[in-house]
Image (cartoon, rainbow, N blue to C red; front, side, top):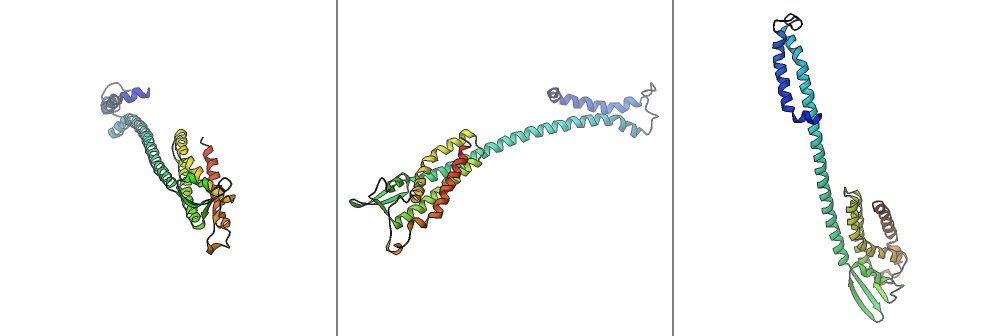
Length: 242
């Protein structure tokens, strides 16, 4: 019924307008008393009273069609805005992902091997595992090199956590969210090893003369615990979309 009205709205409006125009003429012509409205009051009141229902009916139809078109427009605008937001989210995530990947690939792990004594400069977050003294007992790292490594890892960790938060808050579908999570998981695991190696004191750190009395495993203890906790919370949140 509504579709028929919409398709024939032009004809309906024309009919209503013609009826509204000719109704006063018809109702004021001399003739049958039941149709003779010339003695019912002022002619203006008669014309207004006879045409008002037609104009009112026309207004209702036009108002309904306006509301309907507005709903269609709002729906299309909502879909457009959502598609734009998805595109923006994807673009931002890809930029952060590439940044994380580059930082991880260029991360320097400078190891001092004591048997025989030699410096080994490795590049890539995956080499953090080479600092594990339970499996690489001859591998050590100088205090200043460790400080530099740790601060660089924190920078990458912050980007990873930001990346996860954007994925969770984005308007992407579940499948797209999962697709964005997977590529970053390897880098996250690599840098996360440093936090656990530090927590378990499984790193041989050679102190400098200036800090010989310091406990190097207390220096970043609070920061270390905080990042471990933040990654745990992020992983729990991510499990809800997988």
